[in-house]
Length: 135
Image (cartoon, rainbow, N blue to C red; front, side, top):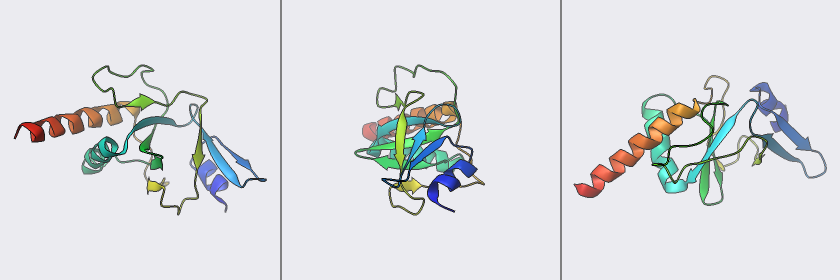
């Protein structure tokens, strides 16, 4: 099974270009995504893991992309300026599942968390960071 077939088995909308052997995820219908700077995203991912809610996370340049269930609020809370929603219809390049670009690769037994769960984890990560700075 190639990567695009495996991604499809998760219910994701993906396209595979046989010429470039590149697979892209189409954000929106089956999966959502939130982009954050890597340092902050690592703290968010840690909060999610502690609460057994961690889902797929992909490195994309200096950012991490945390994949979520689709839907939820379109606008993001103003207090989380480092969190950016990836708009529906956007395309994300997906590496093979064994690529180190996956901080946490997708797994059939671990669905992506809801967007609201990730936003709540981001607030908690921010609160912990602020407490650490005042201690």
